Length: 320
Image 1 (spheres, helix red, strand yellow):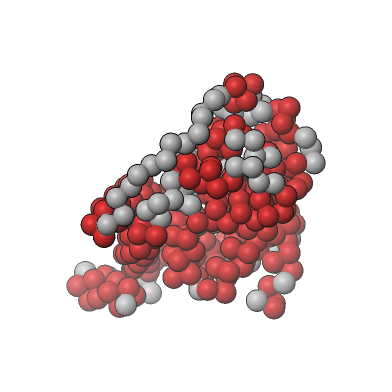
Image 2: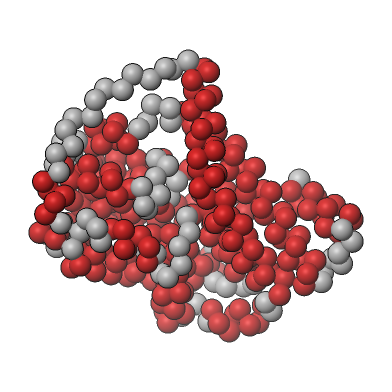
């Protein structure tokens, strides 16, 4: 449907030549912008109905007093279904620490929340298919779950800023919320306006970059830059992703274009994960609540995990 619409607008109405660099780039841009914004609006609205009662305070209350594998599974699951980006996850980090939740469990949530969410899953599946989407989701959740244990082993509590321990947030007051159909509609539509309003620019930028790659960058050039899936090429992909900042939705069109140019799946996954969960802006925000040693260990774990995922899936690409 979206491909047919873009074809009609770009080739039939605008008269651009199919197969030309400009035609291919503009067709990619129009198709992906429309597709992603429609999917975003639809999924956010539907999930808004279900999430009407799921506030940050209730997430904190659900996690309070929990520890062990069950707590980590819950943290990863909540991170995947809550609509919190890496920046807005920081207040929850403080709330989790104040509530006495183990730091390893808290960090599992902090990894999962920006990297995997239901909106990104639906949009990613619409762009690159369910098989690769499930690969991304499985690896992202695994990194978050395992990361809780790995990071907890370093006894990181000593490197949380002192003021975080002293914050007394108190118990979240029970919030009475109108649960009528009208109230749920208003809440869901407000979610659409806030989330789409916050990330639409990243969608435009991401699709624009993807369109340029799709239309103007030769496949052999991309292959040379990205390498053949070696460890070094995956490391480079992670390093390139770190200075960038986007949420999971904004980086998807770039990943789509890279895959279309023949870049190995593992390299693309490592790049996506680095942009979403290891970006420099997120690290600077996280530095407000933790000290440099904790931040360094956290970043080193994520970078190592992303490189490992990239190398693994590049090695398995003939089976995927």
